[in-house]
Image 1 (cartoon, rainbow, N blue to C red):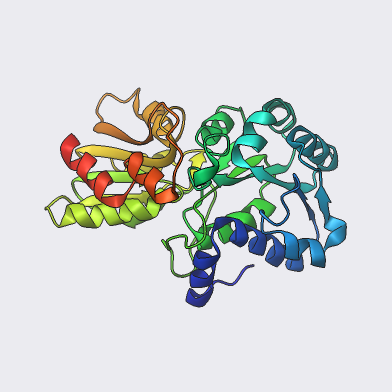
Image 2: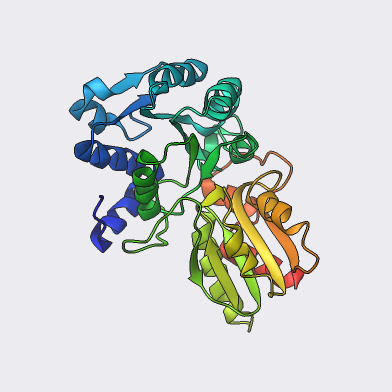
Length: 320
């Protein structure tokens, strides 16, 4: 089991999502020898260079060929072995979509696909590298689990949990170096079980990935205006923790916030669950609209997509 302290949580925040993923893989490899790791020629970008040096026989580079990445991973996973296979989010999900669908969805092989640089963190590289649709694409595949951790602590706990999770899964890594901290110490993490961070009587904000931190900040802004918001860290988008959503049905408004398209992601998952209910609150879906944002710095992109804490609070207040 990975030991987590406040000091380590701060370190992982500074390292960012990709480097923390690599550190999590290294720590787990030192504790167990029942999984292999693959990369589409992105060992350095995946934070896996230390793992490769220490465990060269457990690392495979497929080259810049994401379809082959999943195909080779499938062959290795036929006996039930857990395989972590990483590449940039749009490439590993959409370029290799057929292989993911057949080998992970249909065949239910024990592959954990890791989407690096998802959301808008690839910034100046533009929409070819943004992970806007990746979570939606993976969520629609039958039998696929989709996890979008909020910070370094949750990335560590997710990797640890996925080592013992005998189902195909997509690990969606949002944010970069200087990843804001949501959890400052160890947490009780379970795939498919949301974490409630704040209690509020008026509205509920359900967020995933980087947006969990911004949702917490938005809730504090709203509290200054007399609006009390619950904040739920819905790290697992599929299977959705429907019990956590149902616990908020008495609120005036349920807000979903994600660094992804609002089409088919967390907001859609919550809406699908709420749709058949006769009594339910209104829902506000915040995320990237049905468009490709203009390239720029990460902060510019967040502001352009209205995903900063003041903008989230402002849009919630307007909806109320």
